[in-house]
Image 1 (cartoon, rainbow, N blue to C red):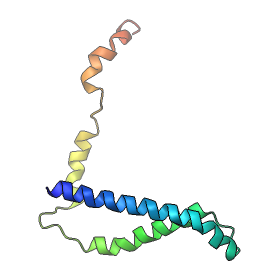
Image 2: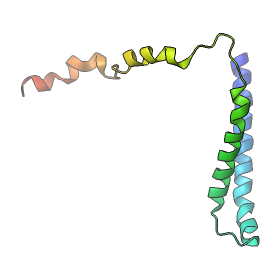
Image 3: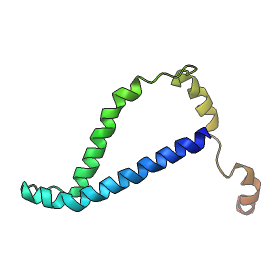
Image 4: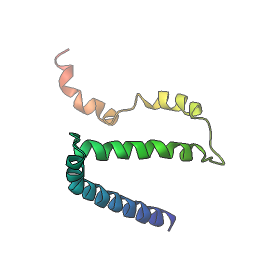
Length: 102
């Protein structure tokens, strides 16, 4: 139930952001011409998005996880995992043609 609620809320916000971005791109060229600015409406929308995302960082920094751990505890785990590839189980199968060329 929690995952469904989260996904419904996130989907609603994605829909609203898409609609607002579309409306901004529809009316922004006229507004930019009114102020005699030669900016691209796309740059304005993406710039506003970047500024709003950066403005949310201080709020996110205040979030504390009760059982959270330092990121550095995961470094040894990532070092062990980096050797894995999606084709590890197929090594004997896809290297059969190399045996004759060695």
